[in-house]
Image (tube, rainbow, N blue to C red):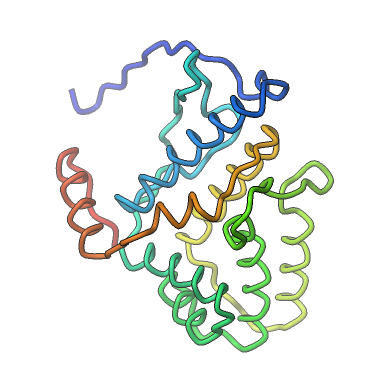
Length: 226
């Protein structure tokens, strides 16, 4: 019935079992992780918002078992366009375009100081896809990916006073980005993330996304994003 949940046993190994695997194997797993999260995001406007180490296992062929779909978000196509617009704004140091991107995410009435602080956070999140070169995703501070920069941004926003409402969509995307970044760090993956990302978003069109999203959601009786 519509109210019945069923389970299926999936064979797979923990991601940490592959920390000492060959670089080729680690990169393959990292790419499979990247595709598992971001192809649904950029092609259908949906994301699994909880990519911690207990929510996936690795199969013998290095493909993935993805677990626990209790934290999934459906995004309006305009939000996805805003993610891409912010990327190009950062590449071109275009603050006006960045403001428009943040507004499409749901941020409102940002002051100049608040914008500059959010851009610090955005540059951290987008850093792996900003340079056309093979690189690791980043570094870990005190065991947590992004802790130091998050603390800096929090303190700056607090010092600037006023109130800033964090859109729920931003929280989901941010959580996914940090969770995946942590996985890539554990794997010590070395990939040209710039090229991977630009291939993924090449030819992006909100109308096409809207059609693909509508068809997918209708198939499973899920409501569209607001």
